[in-house]
Amino acid sequence: MGLRIGVLTAGGDCPGLNAVIRGVVRTANSCYDATVVGFQDGWNGLVNNLRVQLYDNESIDKILGQGGTILGTGRMNPYELESRLDDIKATLADNEIDAVIPIGGDGTLRGGRWLMENGINVVGVPKTIDNDVANTDYTFGFDTAVSIATDAIDRLHTTAESHQRVMLVEVMGRNAGWIALQAGMAGGAHMVVIPEVPFDVNHIAKLMERRFQMGESYAICVVAEGALPKEGTMEMRSGGIDKFGHEIYTGVAQQLGDELRSRLNDRDIRTTVLGHIQRGGTPTAFDRVLGTRFGVNAVHAVAEGDFGKVVAVRNDRIERISLDDAVGHSKKVPMDRYKEMEALFG
Ligand code: F6P
Image 1 (cartoon, rainbow, N blue to C red):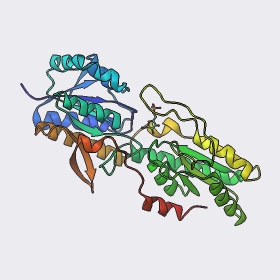
Image 2 (image 1 turned 180 degrees about the horizontal axis):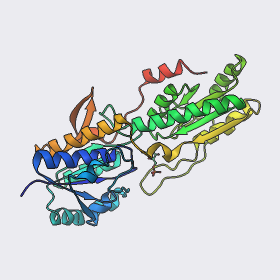
Image 3 (image 1 turned 180 degrees about the vertical axis):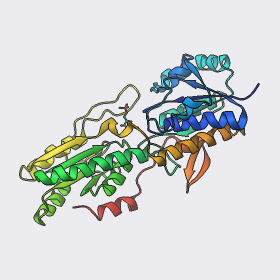
Image 4 (image 1 turned 135 degrees about the vertical axis):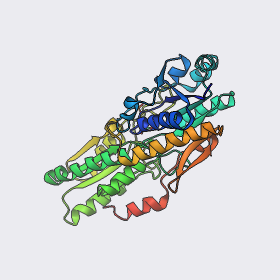
């Protein structure tokens, strides 16, 4: 019997997931005569045997530029996942699966590592619009998110200028400020606030003030959702932790705006939270290509029996890194990249 590969998408969705799925199915079928079984709604599909056979046909071909994931996605608490090992093994036996390709971010790849530790063959594909998976230059979805955020910032310039306002734009980025940095630079923001550099509201106010004293009438500040104030400078509301262990955010841009207002003589300040718009819709050409390359190369790794790996891109080459190297630490914005942006502040 030919090779049988299981594939699932877990965690938050991300433009380019369908490009990966298509890359997996086409490569498996045409290079190895292998069968691909998709598991639905993330780990849930593997635990509860919710499956769909994926064929290399016209409908798979059409998903390349489609947003979201045709398999559906979902999150599962790691403790719950680990309590369902027997169910997962039963699903894999029932479908005669030789290896699983989980497509996801840090939590999903940790799940993949746990499967490997329990005797299940895994090759992971890294995914997150935040671009913070370690040891890969890029993850797909990031480029699309940056394009969407840049377009939003472009649009905010004209309305901000018309009303002489300060506009705060909150973008995604829990642990790393890649989207804020790239979109801020591409969109000509006057200030960027990222999780890597705790902010000081007085310093931001001074930069804005200096800008207005020089005759400028408006300002745009991009804020990553995970940004935090320097200790002792500003109180932030706490939102607690969700059932997956993620911090619940309380709107850093809005709170920063409230603090700035009094420091800027009650100037008009508005906040825009881009939220899930950054994750929706069709992927850019870059993300389609990266997703496709990840899908193709994940299947090659499976066919070669090179398990316990994650496909990654480094200097435009697809490499295989260990699951250990991909999880547990997020890839931060390096200080030299931040300093380049900082030179444009104000
Ligand atoms: O990790 C990717 C991400 O898009 C984060 O930037 C964001 O905080 C989170 O997912 C949102 O997830 P959810 O879909 O659960 O709201």
